[in-house]
Length: 469
Image 1 (spheres, rainbow, N blue to C red):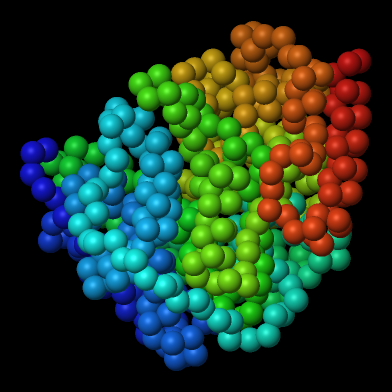
Image 2 (image 1 turned 135 degrees about the vertical axis):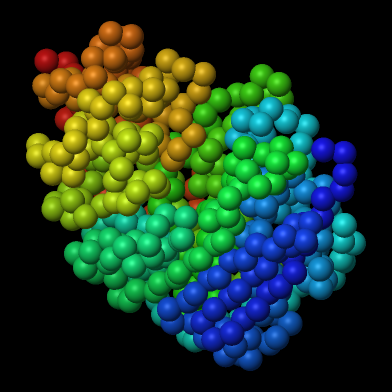
């Protein structure tokens, strides 16, 4: 490239329910609007103090604009918000950039890329803590996207008699926001959240003709750190409504990457933002640097998808309202995410559920064969999507075959998938990983872990009954 390219945080504007963020990349401006359904940002600023609020808004902006690092700026400045650039912030922001963008670096073959050079001086200063505007409501705020994991998380909380509220958001990259919220609301109508909070995110970066109109960026696509960004963006809701805990539904399988990159020896993990490593880093940072009396955790961290699908069996007809596709909601049927979830539904859920959701028989579509080859380890790496591990997909295909399903994906597994070591697969995936690190508070763990244990017993019995006939 040969020349300096500057990325600068140019604007952070709070007005009413809108947080408007502007970034400048070599004179070209990109904006993101975050709309809050029931948060008045100016009132929040007046209550917590303007400087503390600007520090909060800075964090939302910083983890929102990091997607523009994909366009390979050489330098980064946070402009007039540079007064919040502390050593702990730099460490977290840089770690997120390196870990989330490992996939981007791998696909662009730039093993030595470390992101833009920070042009701002690092500030040694006491941080400003943020205070809640209301008393502790006593319930947790559950991130709810409308997929299988969200449903299982809500189902566990309800069975454990733990009250919760729901936080949903629609992002312009996924299509019409009214469609997204309608899909989520249709599922929430069948659950029992005490209240619902909504966000709308409008992002012109992904609507722009990139990278075609920026050929000197030498970039094939723009990547975003959606999970870290969405967590910081939810903090105004947390503060306004008094939630001391936020619950996500990130599973154990997110801790394992897609491949080990021979050029660097590092693990490339599309789901790193959902991993325990990411969870612990971000949770500790927020509690230490921003909101002392607050923590967030994943309630599904001890579970692989095998047990998540087992718990999903108990949700009844509510599963018919789930959606997970990132291409065309609710399902396109022709992407890696649709292929994986469809396989899990066909393998693990009661008869008729798969057909009701996927009338096109996703397992038999020729255009999905590559995804299934990748899923079962017959390619260089697993699909760069939020899906389970290789042996989880192999187990699911074996179960689908045992249930009498005939499809291209099943035939591929029978022809090239090799033998399944059932005992080791059950030991890894049909197990509650109690000894693995997780952030579930003891008061919650006491109620939900026994429910997970029941799912473990049921899944093991069901799987062995099908595969040892």
